[in-house]
Amino acid sequence: MTSHKDNPADFRSPQVFSPSVDYDTVLTKFREDFNKRWEGSSVSPETGLEGFEEKATLGAGSFGRVILVKEKSTVRYFAAKILLKDQIVRTKQVSHVHNEKKVLECMRFPFLIFLEFSAKDFDCLYLGLPFINGGELFTYHRKVRKFNEKQARFYAAQVFLGLEYLHNVHLLYRDLKPENILIDSNGYLKITDFGFAKKVETRTMTLCGTPEYLPPEIIQSKPYGTSVDWWSYGVLVFELVAGNSPFSPYSKDVMVMYAKICEGEYKMPAFFSAQLKDLVDHLLQVDLSKRYGNLTNGVKDIKDHAWFKPIDWYAVLNQEIAAPYVPTVANMEDLSNFDKYPETKPMHKSKANRHGDVFINF
Image (cartoon, rainbow, N blue to C red; front, side, top):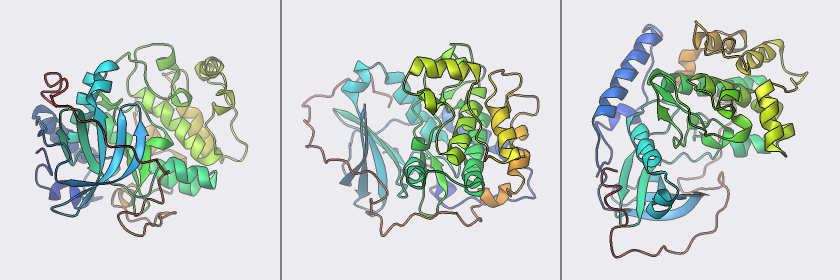
């Protein structure tokens, strides 16, 4: 089983980041480790969820669902993403799914989800991920409507560090939104759902992402690189403080919204601080030669921005700052931070291996 790979300690015990070590050196080491894992690859065992007890549905999507499982031998809990092979083949997502597994297998960073195990059987593929029991940032944000700038900054700093890591290992994320960010039991974040993540050394052309978060260059089918994630990051930061995304007023008609995005036309809330206005303005730049994250200083334009001045980046990395909100979680099976899903009937099990050849290397 591609289970609990390497030395489990290397990514379960929290890594300590020392201010005395230059962070660029740390990023270089991360890239070397990532590339080493990228070159080696493992094939999942044909065991399905044998050895696991299925507990409840955590989420449902077009390819299958995510369920809470408990490993019988260790009593550890995981979120198992179940993907239906038929559905993947029918919607031509085969390479996407292989890519998602590989990306999850290779990443190791405090604010990103990673692969704990994978498996397959005659009908499905399984990605075993850490169970992050505080629910989605989206759900919590919707409940409180908007965050003050201090709280938004705490979250934005972690998302920044996650994107910096991804771009450093040459991955574009391409699907940043509050629904894809989970809150852990300490109130810190984990970015999840790497279905759109792509290893790109130069530029790519694919249309993907979520309408309100799409940057102009993707809408206009232009080649793009890491700049796309910094646009979406600008949308996210705006939404955390404003309570809605900059282009949501036009979301009733997606073509009108796309036109507004391509013109960079949105209303900056008056209650944003001058520093926040400045940061958002530099991120939501249609002109790539002016967008922060894409200029000669790269991500330092964002990291060193006045809005982030109160942030101690090492304290964030080491999770030493008291989180503004810590989810209430009674025990590992407490799902009160998740939306309720009706439990589905047991699936029909095939007598023969469906698309065995297509997923031979999964």
